Image (cartoon, rainbow, N blue to C red):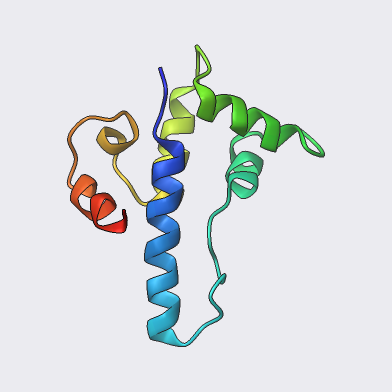
Length: 98
């Protein structure tokens, strides 16, 4: 199953950039990245391994851990329905970015 991780990251980046503009903070302040998310999901891996594992997860790894879904949703501030491609309240917000 392929999760919409890239879409979730893109949505969170757009939200954070808008918030940073309003607050007058640097443009890249507190923006979630694949590497940061990889370090949260795979804390025991070192070097580039978390990023490689994240890339594999984005491509559609056959298995994943349920707690990964919780972590991704929490960090990207989306619900699991959005992540799994099921109709979600976040879809309208995401479509506005395109």
